[in-house]
Picture 1 (cartoon, protein in one colour):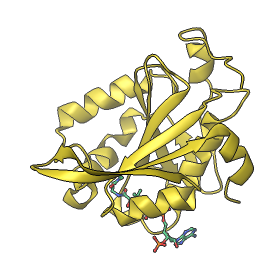
Picture 2 (cartoon, protein in one colour):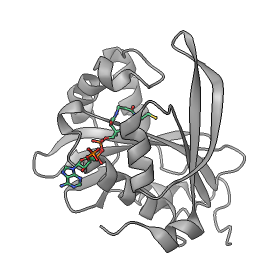
Picture 3 (cartoon, rainbow, N blue to C red):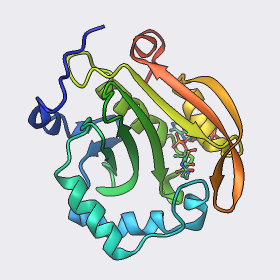
Picture 4 (cartoon, rainbow, N blue to C red):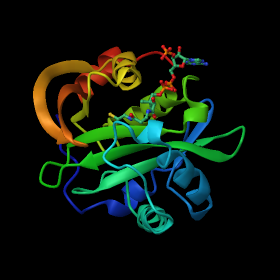
Length: 202
Ligand SMILES: CC(C)(COP(=O)(O)OP(=O)(O)OC[C@H]1O[C@@H](n2cnc3c(N)ncnc32)[C@H](O)[C@@H]1OP(=O)(O)O)[C@@H](O)C(=O)NCCC(=O)NCCS
């Protein structure tokens, strides 16, 4: 494995990695014009059900958009949000989060949030594969491992991870206090070496 990614040495290059295009989508930085769409889906109770928030204010959304606009994907210790734009409508339909470990930047935890109006069409899977292609690129961020924690009841999220080929590594029983109750977590992961062997076809 190559560790060609010394902390703090190529933030500028990381920032230049975006945007990228998939068949129907553009993955890019969040922008000021995304604010209404971002507020809309993040404040949908169904979308927030398994997420760490109940609702977000306009001020919080503005802060997120402003911070994200200048953040580079892959920055140690930070969560980068890949804004997912639907090409045909030129609007934000969701985002993919990638939290890079501060002292172990070859590993990160992912999550995803899509507008209900744009679920069930394969967009989340398409965006997720695009992000993994980018982050596992040996000539780019060269990440070693990306993992996710998901409640077993969150079937769409479990299906998304399994469609992408993620391996279930564990089932943690009542391991997290979440919105007033103890919840289980599945842990899923993908290694760079696995991605290059079993990446799903487009
Ligand atoms: C998790 C989440 C992103 C998954 O979204 P999704 O819409 O189910 O996933 P996709 O966009 O990849 O769509 C896949 C579905 O579209 C269907 N589909 C329809 N047209 C398709 C097409 N042209 N190409 C591919 N799939 C298509 C697939 O068959 C699949 O259906 P299925 O789930 O019944 O098998 C979404 O449910 C979400 O945002 N949830 C709220 C936030 C959340 O809980 N996040 C996870 C926290 S751990």
